[in-house]
Image (cartoon, rainbow over all chains, first blue to last red; front, side):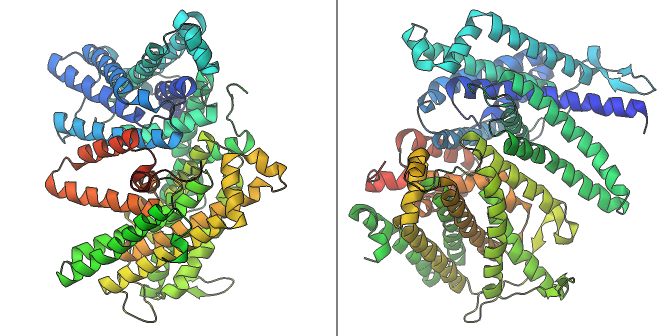
Length: 306
Length: 334
């Protein structure tokens, strides 16, 4: 096992984590500010991916597609917030789960209706194709590296937005006491729509970028959704910092577990069984991580309002 | 009116009796019309309603929103599947320290299911009940996902492909392969679970459980520790759902990881919410409506998920309190 291989896998883990962060950031903001569990967040991820590859297919430009996916997800987010989500804020979590589950069904079927049953494919833009050399030989795809940079830039942007701007101040105020900022004259309905659309746009952005790495199909959002939930629970619900650290932790655990656990089992088991057992345990690893963290700190690593 | 219907308001009791009667009548009519498909559909409703009755005990009465009940459902299924698998090829399940073969006797499989699910539910409950709210939702999901991936990783029992049950497990009296007989078995189990639930909820234990949902501190002040009460309810809830899983595996002649997936947890939760959270017959109403809609709309259009989604959304937004709430008015308490 070479150094280059190790670095490559570490980078893969970080890339996966950063992608999860884009999903988790929106979820955790929406939960922190509005107290809403949004299962349909994965559908917004899927919408972003579909619009990105559709627009890229028509115009031939990946960048237009990415922008389109971002905007389409934001628009869809704003739309469902105004039509449906808004009515759920003062309901309990159960109603929210059921309503957003219904939205998943509706979105999946609509997307299948509009774009057809066949998966779409998206090419990596020429600017980002090729590989970066790694120390110790081998190379790492530029595109994956770009995703890491884009994710980190988004994290920084989100931090600046929340810590330094007026909108961010209102978001933080909304997290601590929503009645009070309403009483102080902030238009809370518009604020909620904006936060929801922001979360949706991040999910759409993640979907668009991932569209070039995997096939774009209905149902692609759900595995990511579950992982994003794991991330925000590990990080502490409502905490963007927790979401970032949680995502990288989950990304690394998952990727490194998948690579190294089968190899560890090969020491004691025959090769075919070792692969099966190792990869299954690798899938369990994230949930094990989460259970251990929650048993140790029942409100996550960075509890909000603790 | 049977005693266990009288624990609710008379109007709700009527609705409950009608629901139970309809579910009993449907397969009988299907039998006279020689439509075996509808017998199996009614059996599905009975089994999934049973799973919902289990979840309702934790979620509805105890306020423990478990997003991991598929773990118990699937485990029940795997107990039935693995027992049948070893009985079918004559191999042993355990060889050491004692030899334990498979069995195709339901009267052995069911107690075994209760035992296995109770142990697992206890372990999951002890850890999960340290958390509350959304964290509880997610940690129960995490445990269910662990068991899901564990099932995938065991190639002996089919791994990702699951396990076929070639011959339905047997009853000492009556032929479980006969669709109508098997329906009665499932229906009987459902009524039994409803009866047990209604007795539990009305007992001092049930009152403590509901108090734990509404105000844990107050319960503790009155000298009852909430944790053991909730844990007991969680285990009983898991066991009922596990029995439903064992029946489901026998109905389909198949058990696979899909029985353990989070979709299944979500579906069971939907039965409960759709029917009415914390209403005795809520899960039955919810499961019946969901499965009817699925098969009705599914028969008319390929786009059935769209309409199902729209209907679900309509129920949440405009019919609070679920179907039972709509038919029988709001619950007396809360």
